[in-house]
Image (cartoon, rainbow, N blue to C red; front, top):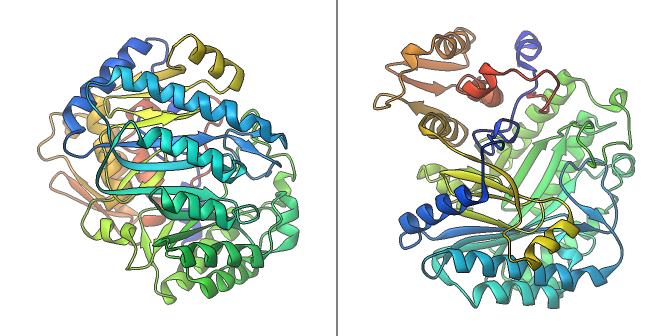
Length: 454
């Protein structure tokens, strides 16, 4: 990759799991009543045909991983499990009262935190409570994030019996010095055990999450981690750029200094090297940061142009409505976003008062919906067209100037009111999406809000 392009485009930018991005939500004018109306509208339009997605945030971890920017609560007290499960089921009951009809679940994902912090018995209570009040959509997909150190055969069997067929394990890197720096020590043997157990039980998709750009990480470390990963041949690999956002409250990124991180040039080389190794082993690059075997549903979704991106990352199918349950969870009705409170105590208190625990959100206007469509097209298919749009980009010279600049740098092809990202341009997809982000252009942040794009 050209050094000049890295220098030019390595800027702070969103990962676009939503548009508008969270810092640009109109939370000042947003209300819970608006969110309820937008969700009811979406549910009426889509439940009978495609169903909805559920994301459940399970925030507890026994120790703090210092690379993590997710919302979590550190504790070794497992008596917190039962009250939390009861609260999530209470939140679901409030949504059931709101929705007009029986929900049909298409996707269900357990994220965290550490979902396998919870006992198999409590996970069974949670999932059974959700499924007993719902129907299942055709070709539904249930998945969860497992910690290789504490995912037991009982966890895997319990969730398999409830319909789960996909699990992803956080690997990050196998170098012990890097693991100590990010406070995430887990031997290869633990990852192998958890992977083998899932396959023995019958899981059809096992994923590994690997991060490049970690403190003290070198290209040789990335190669060693990938070699060990290929020995297990997971069906799906998330190959993430480490997001260094130490200014976000509570994210725990204090176990190392900025000088311990690879340079942008070294970081990009780590990705390019990893990509070559994955492709040689038979993996196909999917969207941004993801690779999959051709037998995996994510690859098939890309080929069929059904790939979708939301707050859970890339998914193999799109649902118009996604409800997030649990502290900090984000919901998406397509017409609006809503995020839950981040305090467990506030979450419990609001639910006791029969209030859906939303703290902020955004209702999308027509411009937002159009721009969201284009950014999703780019993130999932590396192309988009506005031939039939009511929004006229010819009247938005700043967008066209940016696209023409990308074209002159060889990052995209631009013709007939459509753009197609080139192979050279795929590593810069976040930058290209930023050309369509009118909210970001109209109000540039005074301080850094996002991780670097390279």
